[in-house]
Amino acid sequence: MEKILITTSSFNLDNFDDLALIEERGYEISLNPYGKRLTEPQIAGMLDENVVAIIAGLEPLNKNVLQNAPNLKVISRCGIGMDNVDLEYADLNGISVFNTPDAPSKAVAELTLAHIFSLSRKIVEAGINIKSGKWKPLMGRLISQQTLGVIGYGRIGKLVAQSLSMLGTKVLVHDKENIEKACDFEIVGLNYLLKNSDIVSLHMPYTTETHNMIDADSLALFKKDALLINVARGGLVDEAALYEALKNDNLGGAAIDCFAVEPYEGKLLELNNVQVTSHMGSYAIESRSMMEAEACSELVKGMKKHGLL
Image 1 (cartoon, rainbow, N blue to C red):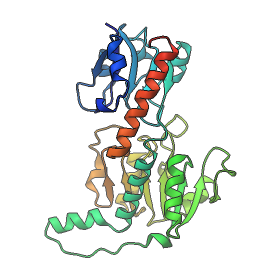
Image 2 (cartoon, one colour; image 1 turned 90 degrees about the horizontal axis):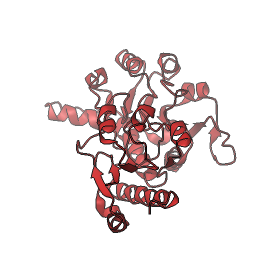
Image 3 (cartoon, rainbow, N blue to C red; image 1 turned 180 degrees about the horizontal axis):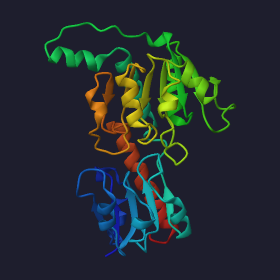
Image 4 (cartoon, helix red, strand yellow; image 1 turned 90 degrees about the vertical axis):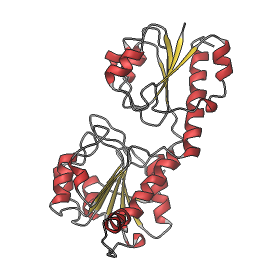
């Protein structure tokens, strides 16, 4: 029986509007049995000649993995980033690849803002103190008096910049693309942004070019009390270099939602000036439902394109 895999860590089939059509045509729906992001061996083991379409999460869909599914025709990525999919292999083998760029944008932007406010006012640190028996008000910073540096001015970066600018926050923007016509804020070089921002928020995809773009040399340019926010992708930040900068008080704090290896169990967890969340930028109920529905819609569109429906 031909199969459609849904490999995201969780998925609500109630959001699959065309599920009846899929089942009428005799396709088997197979869900992620592990309840977490699949490793390369796990996803490779789920693929075979019967798989014709995938609603994908963040698992590695590289050439070695995709070769296990010779009849695969459609990958519908439930999310924005496509860096986990070998797009060159897909193109060469006639596999249509889709993503859902609109649905998760607000949720990721809101988590970014939540981290900025919480880190600026030391909310998590204060809560830890109180639970351990220490009642000590902590001095924070007024967001409206800070300079926000946004690296990557796509849907999410734009939402973050616009939201904080409404409070009076000065915004600097850096993007590798020409965004002059689309950006209402001051566009600057990367080094200038790092040197002059009180808060640096990353909104870049992960590629070979952006791997560890925030490394020891970059961190040396930051203000001593600056804050770094990464709700974009693991691998953008050299985590060992970040640990050293924070440990030695060369950086004010960091909020990280995405790590190079997840689940994260590294040394950053030892530091009080680090906030962490478990790669949950899109995990708002409303956004998640929209994203899953959009992924299903794109899947059906791709299957119709290839004559599978």
